[in-house]
Image (tube, rainbow, N blue to C red; front, side, top):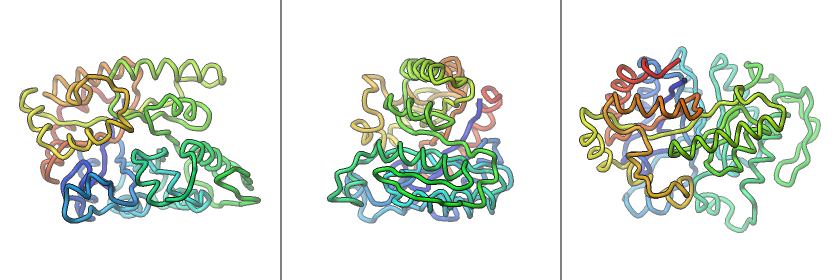
Length: 336
């Protein structure tokens, strides 16, 4: 099982306090992930401040554009991969430019790029960018996935959709990798269908192990119907992590974190339908031994990649300390 860490490209005010994500700290966290044995780092994609963040903080957060950020991260690391968890396609109006950016990044990063896409967690953010538009974000992602596959796979590509249109585009060079891994983010079952049709991995977030197991069952059934080998599709959920000497200490520290407030804010979007289970029960919060047991339960449910783990912390040093403990006491027992 692969294990990757979250990178706070757009997490100030959401999962971390303000200030937090200085450019130097973003690089420092990526380098720490590389040092402690993580497979990759995954950042998210925001363009404007969420309403609840504006209400809590007197100054706005710094949301870094992930693809540009990764150009610097790749230049300051040697082996670790980078991924978007997720790139919000409804905020990307020109899919050809997006594809060109990804292909360029893959070459300069020597094949260390993976791409997760999705509709975005906050509808208010999309409305701020397109206030008068009556658009279906899911349909935009459908078209975007098809377009990316064509642009990366065909010498000359054309596409005629409702949201994306281009004709006779020779996007070259193609990505360095024979195929850039594409993931679809989101817990809605529609995202499983999108994954089977056009992608290489499913990226849900904060999902209870029982719901994950049901999702994997659906993914496997749909893949078999589509003539795909389910084993070629990654199941790569994101979770929050906080390691403590006792479970009680870990839970208490997590509940005091900005991360806990963020999870509460997602109750009506990304985490809708999770039921009565507490966040500390769903996520990787507890002692190292308890977290290993929970990670192994996820593996048994069909998880192949613990992707973009976000460590609950209120300072950069606390985050790096958490990454180190997890890297030394958990990763060796669950990786592979």
